[in-house]
Image 1 (cartoon, rainbow, N blue to C red):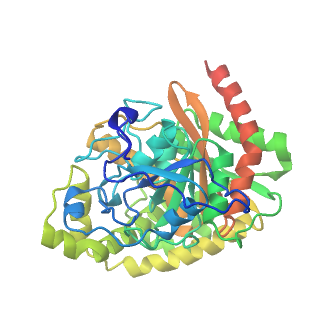
Image 2: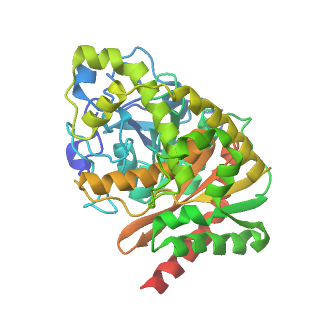
Length: 440
């Protein structure tokens, strides 16, 4: 049966999916890895007989129910988990807020007066509210990392292309990934062991933690505390010799030459962002808009769907923009991959703030939200444009709001990164508790 509304006071779930139990396993086989766990699925994944809504009722109305289930959903079912429902998402996956005009905004369990983050809003809320053990989402520009941070849980964006997106409605394939949420690093890793290929790097100790001070300055006043929590945790577990302070903006400026043509004029006077990272974000969003238009222009023009505030303007911008510069963005991606590979070497890790501060309040003014989004995408675009894997790790609550930090590793180092987060998390919790107590 579908999840009853009184069991979902947070508004995370839709009502269009009945409970999906795992297939029965032979008693002489070892127990499946996810046996006994429950999960939720973002309404962007195909499930046999259940119309994929893509966050918009006009999309659901004009599409038929799929005849197969996305391989990523099948994999966790076959690993013993039970699917209890499909979750609310931002329309057409085109937001990081989590506010849905049609289906309502899922309530952020950590901060009810704040947005839950999108576009995988319901999936994050279902985990944070303890309604399921884990959930599946997608991350194109930040749609797992952002709601994980806002809701105070773990979120994982895998290396681009490493997990099949078959049966997942595309937003922008050049960045689309299947990600997931959990409340603890052990469950997060178990899901990764099911979804990730066995070839994913799992071995070795980290060789360095690159901590870019310019990126942590996006956080404003708590920046020193968040970076210090990370540094103290690394020192405790691995020793201080692994810490490497860099200015990431300067490094990218000197090692990604194709990005320079996007910097001059457009971002040189933006004091609120690192110009190089703002330019990187501009290139990512240009490619994202171009692919979104290619994927959905025909449907949008023929159906003329009702779109909510913010989404309507974003979709209109994508449809009306010209993309003469889009081809200039592809060399940026390859140069960034090479430059970050050279920076991190084998088993190096890049530490970043997941987002540039506390989750925005519900119905925040457009101007304030625009500035926050600009800063957020400057940070989120690093993994997006490089295709590297990234994990958002909760650091508890400060001043009544969730705080997080992210770790990023090279392509195909997904299981290495998940295992590292498990190793480091105890120290991170301890150091965060000390830091927030001292702050009070």
